[in-house]
Length: 108
Image (cartoon, rainbow, N blue to C red):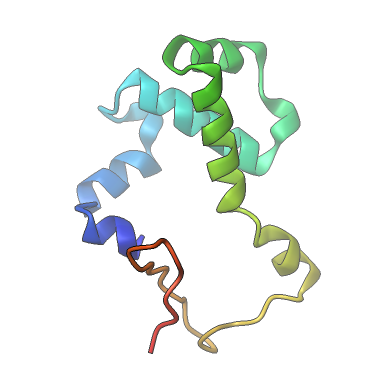
């Protein structure tokens, strides 16, 4: 969230995303968040209605992009579940900060 905060993300928006079903976010955003939640937790549980909602708000290419983006940010689940992940800064969360080319910058 460090990069998102640099780009203007604020606590109010974070709270809306945390409780998106009852938030003032658009139906388009809610459909994307429902999909992301299902994809991250139980991909087999994505319903025909969720698929229809996605197609109402997004093109097939946009759905593929959303899928790849969600999966990209969840790659760490495998090493965490296997206990093979390594802390960058022991005992601390590591902020994700990227340079202008999109490369991760290791915190100092």
